[in-house]
Image (cartoon, rainbow, N blue to C red):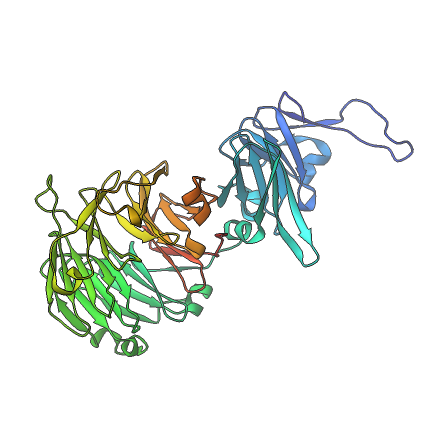
Length: 465
């Protein structure tokens, strides 16, 4: 590989250790100094350049010279490459990223399906093997560090992913007991999939119908499914009715809610909290169809603070994320008899979603990114740290070992517990086929990403401790 951007081809002769001479042919890439070369299965050749491209040359071109037939594009200057177990390619860059390309992208050109991140430039990559097969990916970086990634993190980005398709844009999702998934759509349908449906790309085993676009879904500890809609209704389906393929949509109770439902949360003791657009959280006892109490959410600068998300903290308090950029805190007693907030915490922007993080912490999703709060900060508390995602964030979900998944556009940014609290960055980025509108974690630990195109893609569990 040359600084001029070409790859010179030389012949070797078996009769002598090496007979030097001029190149017999050249491979012409996209320009930029060639930093590394990699032989691919079948004799084709990959050439990574400082221009941020990897040119793929056919085996025929490698014998006679010629031009690349496909290109892979990455986020910075290419410094290193390694072949992945299934024929994909990992590409390390000066910016400290490792882009993961599946074999299909290498064969015809295409986008990265995932990205790992290191602390510094990735000068070398090596696929590590042990006695059982492939163990992981080692990245040699600046600062005399070698960072190790499990092979499951690589597989999640490069292996074919299970997916199912629904009839409209995905609005919300929730994992069902036993490995299933409920998907609420903007068209007002709730489609139910079992674990086999998800793995095989099958059709839903049942459909439920809301009065309007589905805003939220929740599974109670009894196995009941609660659905909320913008029409101002919340329906409760028993676990028995969900397993009845013929009559699930006909067997439910409707709760009387005074406004459009925006979010749901299970309360200690089996009750239910229903957040509304009108700035009210309505409280229902187990089995009740009318609220027994209300929580009024307000803000000095907003007569009505839209309730966007609800979360029960480890202290038993209810945290309410609002469109006014606050997290209102309500006591356990208020969840029984109603009342006003104990106080509020302040986010960096309008709170779209709340999620638990590593014990003692919770996260608030804003348009700018992620705010991490310490529960002990209490009233008046501000984020321990704010993480900018780089594009408008749309969905948030807790994942294994206290980590978090954040969706922005078609990408899922993964953070483990140590990076959240310790000040580190995201450790991996996965990519879906379309912009993501909802995230949830399945019983297996896999991450389901619902998109505006009506596709739900499932990524293998990849979050380390």
